Length: 127
Image (cartoon, rainbow, N blue to C red; front, side, top):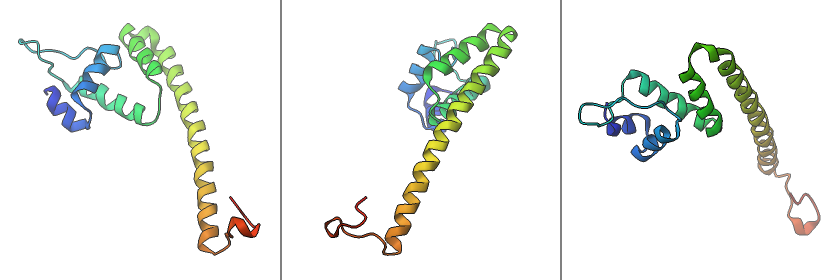
């Protein structure tokens, strides 16, 4: 696939795809005889993984480390697994924080819907 096709398929700009490759977020993409990127199934798999991980808030540095470890071969399987476990725990913590915020918003909205919120100038619930 061309970079334009991959860009459309994953809704990522071509510039972002080039950037991901340049910084090592995805392994080098194969090129055709003319030197143009020719994304194969493996390359697309990396793009899809990185899009998913980035949308989940996984830090670029951790993902670059993961790719570097992957490229070193099977001797890094344990290190890769540990890196993913760490990222999963960080993601769970962020999700818990987000859930607490969502719960707070739901509470506030419910109070408005029940007419339990009062104007600040009447000295009642202000927040």
